[in-house]
Length: 260
Ligand code: 13P
Image (cartoon, rainbow, N blue to C red; front, side, top):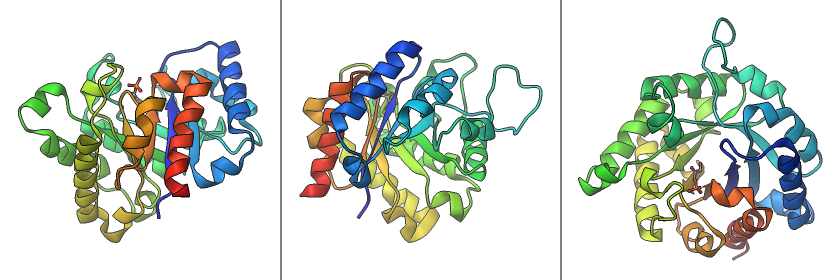
């Protein structure tokens, strides 16, 4: 039985005051930390807010994640942050290969760099959340499963068994991110089942324990149907994770799948 995992990717949003208010709202909404024992919950603020948000999370059962990492341990890499630094700031998770980093931001990130980041984050003891997903063009051309296989295999190349034991995969169809256009539960299940099958070729039975999150326009009103799919183990939430009530409602939808 896989424990569902719901993580909020705040992207480049909020200021410190609002970040603190959001954490307080989520804590208030969850009530006790009991919910966090049956569903793993994390928030991923911008890197400059990792430290202060870590302080707000103390005693909550909610974990902290970063949104990116640089693969080198130290050196002349202006503006970058290492895995050890992220760990020092109190984070347990790090999102790697998010579609905005693959397709939108600056010098676009390729699968080789993503693989280096997965290995560096894992070696430092962080849990990588490896994001994969097809563009709308790739879906229309019938290449979805092929793209997912390529990104998964490339991201996992050379990853040790120890890291493979805790890595989290996030299926985030690019066309569903921030668009309000969500994958149908069937589309999500097809992609997740495919990813699990491909993962099995890489890591054997461990694939049955690996959490595969869905991300892309998850909202309180569609979370239950998505999380109800057999291979969907929670979500990576963007916009809806910036509103405490919505994020808590999405966590509740994940909780309902373990209470059945
Ligand atoms: P939205 O939930 O805003 O579509 O973003 C999803 C996402 O990119 C999470 O990483």
